Structure formats: C-alpha cells, structure tokens
Length: 454
Image (cartoon, rainbow, N blue to C red; front, top):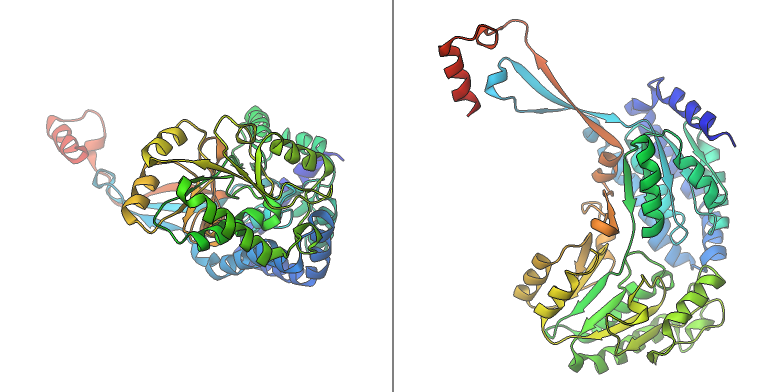
C-alpha cells in the first residue's frame, strides 16, 4: 500500500474545507453511530472470537462507551465549534481577541488489541467532531475485530475521509513515518517510546495513552467485603487485560484474610465454581501471553487460583509479594493480583513516589483525611476512590496518563480538544490609532505604557 499517496489523498480532501463544516461533522457522527448499531451483532462475534468477551461485557466496555461518546459529541458539537471571545489587554485598545477551533488536518489513530473496538473508535469520534480526516490502524492481534471495523467504516465513509489500514505492526511503523498532523497511540510504554521517537522526525504532535502498574491502596477504615468485590470486578474485566486494571494491592496485614475470602466469594458469584469453564470469562489474547503470565506466578505464594487451561488463566492472588518480586517488575495485564503488606501510609507514599507515575490509582477508605492526604501526595493519570475503573466512563473527566503512563487526554470535550488547534486571533480596529505606539516615543507616552503594562 502506498501510504504517502493515502495521506496525500486525505490531505487533499481536508483542504476542500468540507470536513470543517458543522453539517459535515454532525452527519459523520450520526452515520458512525448508525453504522455501529447496524454492525452490533458482528462486533459481538468478533470480540468473542478475539478475546472471549461475552455480549454483556462487550457492550459495557466497548460498544456502549463509544455510543455514549458519540451522543455527547452530537449534543454539544455546535457549542464546541463556536469561536470564543476572550478579554483584550487595555494596551491593545481598540481590538477584540478571539479563539478559533481549527481541525488539525489528517490524523493517525493506532489502537491496541485489548479493547480493540472501543480504543479504535472512541478517538475517531473526537477526530470527526473536530473536523479532521482520519486513518485508523487497529491491532493485528485482534484480527476479527479489525476486519469488522474495516468493513463498518467502509460502509459509511469514503477512504479519502476515513480509512482503515489492516495488517502487522510493520505497517503501523511505516505509517508513523508519514507526515500526518497528529498521532493518537494507545498501547504499551515500550512501543509508545518508539512512536514518540519516529514522530519527532516530522515534529508530529502525539497523544500517548499508555499504562503501567496502577496501585490500589486499602485503608483500615473501609467495607472490606465491598472493597474486595469491586477490586475483583476491576481486575477481572477482560481477564485483567485492561490498562487501568488495579495491578497490585497494598493492604494492611490484618485485613488480608478477609480480603482473600471476599475476593474468592466475588469470583464465584461472577464466574461460578470454575471460572475456566465459564463461557463469559474472557480468554488471554495469545499463547505467548499465557506463558508470560504464568511465569510471573512461579516461586510465589499462590493463595487463590494459579491454574490455566492454556487459553484462560483463573483469577489468581499472590501473597507476601514485595516490590522486588518478579511480578512487580512489569505491568501484569492479566488476572493475577499481588498483595503487598504495609503498616504506615507515609512509607507507602515515599515508595510510590520513587516509581513511574501510573495511568490509574485506586484508594479504598471511608476516612476523608486519609483520602485527601494520599491523593494530594501522589501523581497519577486518573483514579477512583472506593471503586475501580469507573473514572474512565465519565464524559466529564479527561482520561490520560502522566509521565511514563502517557501524555494528553480525551473523552467528552477533551476528545474534541485533542484533535483541535485553538487558533488565537487579535482583530484590531482601524478607527482608532493611538500615536503612543509609534517612534519617536515621548516621555509621557512611555510613562503611560509602562503604567498600563505593569
């Protein structure tokens, strides 16, 4: 495929100006929403084939979130697009200051395999709302979902407006070398570094949605049964293959026995006595990932689960883990939950400050002072108190990382902003022309200007 020609065609179409109009943007969003609804059965089939996701989980974590984003964009698009007038300094009298929301142009969206529909189409919603053309490159690891995305987008959009590129990571790397106007990447930290390096060749702006080891702290003042249930929910959605899953739990030793008991109870209520036999318990994406995950449990104290059928891995808890343990040296990305004891929250804060800033953070406590102390002391992309994952579902909360967990954010208006350049324009009056700005500047004029600027 000639990617240079593809990008050129998209830029040519963008420069016709048609994508900038409200009418074109709103039509694109409505067409996308209609296409998703029409292709819903095929999307379910593909997600089950790739990841073993049930219809219910697929709607909750993939299709439903995208439809909600589109509804939000349609509702507010006219307001988001409207130029905004801001204040003008007195020294610039007489003039008005305006902020115009310009599309960036042609954008490239690179999506991962773990939420292959949602993480490809959600950014596309923002790109279309902002008036861009778009190239979508889904992960080849979730092959069936990628094929459905391709078929769906072809059914409603011309390739010079929105197109899909299918194939290996090699094709994605080739695309990165093209002169697009923005790159939106969701994936691992190592690949994110490579994306950033290649993007620098053309000074292409990027959004990086990465990951990392997202901690979960349990305070003594909490409902331990509900805490265990909500952590199990967040850890086991998509069999733990979630960038914002609680990666590990910091827990007081006196709470540990109850936590393990209630976690096991939650697992049984979700997936029955044998999660490996549950049709709605997702599978691990590949044999290579199964082997990697099982390797993390070797020589560790397994207090729950630890089994695999070669396709799925049972919900697993590892006890007596330290920050030096093998399982703590990389993002887990699977249904394995390490428990780390702590006694003093100040020691926890000091330790976490030495680690890379995580994409997500979870805290379970009924103590407001404890909550404020921990949240105020630590840096992370986003988080939830007394639950897991839920901050991701809000239009009103920007989602994104900080430091090693990413840069930039999206969801709701922030998706629109991500794919928009806020163009500043000062509009001067020709009816008033103050002489004090011109040379030679008198002492009086200089004095007046100094007073105004100070």
